[in-house]
Amino acid sequence: MRFLVRSSTVRLAALLLTLSVSASLAQAPAGMGVIVPPAHDDGHPASVRAALAPAAALARPSAPSQAQFAKYAWPLGRALGDHVVAVNYTDLDPGPGRLDYMGGTHNYDGHTGHDYTLHNFRDMDRGVPIRAAAPGVVTYLDDSSPYDRHCDFDWPDGGNWVWIAYGDGTYHEYLHMRRSSMTVKAGETVAQGQMLGLVGSSGYSTAPHLHFESGDYSAPGGNYAFREPSHGTANALPSLWNVQDDYQGDDPFQVTDLGVFTDAQVGGSVFNTSYCDIVNSIPQPLTFGASEAHLDLWLQFRSRANDTVSVIVRRPDGVVYGAFDWAPTEEVQFGWIWAYWFFSPYVAPADFGTWHYQVVRQGVTIADKPFTVAAATTFGPRFWPRGGRSFRIDGTVQRDTLRRLPYGPPVTYALSGAPSFVSLVQDSIVQIAATSTQPSRSAFFRVVMTDASARRDTAFYHVVDRSKPLDPALDADVPEPASLALFAGAQPHAGPATLACESHSGGRFTLELFDSGGRRVRSLFEGTKPAGRWSVTWDGRDRGGAPAPPGLYFVRLTGPEGRVTARLVRLAR
Image (cartoon, helix red, strand yellow):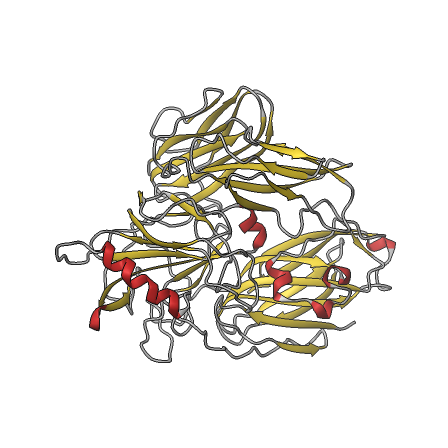
């Protein structure tokens, strides 16, 4: 048997050229590419950056003031580590080199903010909120980008973004939003934690991410100066974060996603596999057929230079089918590889069952992806090419035809949690009325796809009506439906906390835990419940199994009737 590995790193706005390496099973692939300098320094064409100057002048305070920079809350609805990776920090080197706030090179030359990247477009489709890190006035915005799924370097526009003035001459900016997801208008005042839109990949972007930056006009000649918000060994300025997250530039090899796939899924040949396939999260077959010519693997990761891992495939009895050792030759902020082994005719019926695709580092298994091998390849239902989108109410009836994998089984569709002005017509078309009845700018609903074996996939929709009041900030008091209730019990908690949920109608629910900065700590429940009362116990740990620190948390229950929020105070044990 032989295998091939192809590797690449994506720097979001700078390309790392790929290099293919063919080797025997005993050899490790080696070599990466070279960085192509980006054509811009902050996500904007020069014409856009020049247009910001007049808007900034209008937003400056009338009396001279010293720019202090407000403290920042976390700007995403998910925390680092919750399908979010810090791919780039601000480049503090004034020349052609790279220097991040901790003295490393976790960035690219000329980068002027922080890039917080979702693992793939499936995460983007679920809808990850972008929240105002600090209060201020929406001074400038652009929501005209028609495409929010860029994964290559053909950028037709500058993307969707919001620029907010704090009031003392400082600014913060949010770039690459999802199409039609922007919830604010120019001139509006927003509170800290207020939703601005959803993460996308519009404009100068090669993956779904938020580019967040801040600055003021304190540079010589009154020019704009970018401000690195994190304090570190290479940045003596105080941190602007309420809570500064750990530096990610020296993390060991970490797997962000992985899976197996067939040649047919990438146009008939594994050699067609591209980064765009990976960032779209190649769907794993329900069963992988023994008749397939190749067993194809993909792996998305981040790593330090020369951090060696073993990639292993095991049969159901634990015997190794194939393995190789591999290490990137330089730090990889957000990278991927693919590999294959010949499969048919080397697999017999005795090998049918659950196999394992594993990644092992220093003797510890850091990823284990099970997959089922059977006589024939089959697929479950999956929305494709996208699993959700945003719509803006514009006075016209809008429609979206639901689409799925072409080789999946027959399916039916049903709305879940949809507002009254949304309907499903002709069995597979989502129809949104010309006007809405939603109480605030954003409304969310889902479409559930089900096959004959009751296997499901879900698409996530977001409707924006900018004629309605702004969405409430994360910790704001929100009118709650009388038919939905959430009880966090006596406060505070030092150990496990039991959360009681009650619904008059039943349906599909999510129960999520956020910290006081708006970061999602953990998903506590996602599934279907009948009408009535049910409970979920939080064991006091985060998604990684570590004890959550003491402090204030918010628990949010979302269901067909709407959403309710409860506060939970955790004490140190």
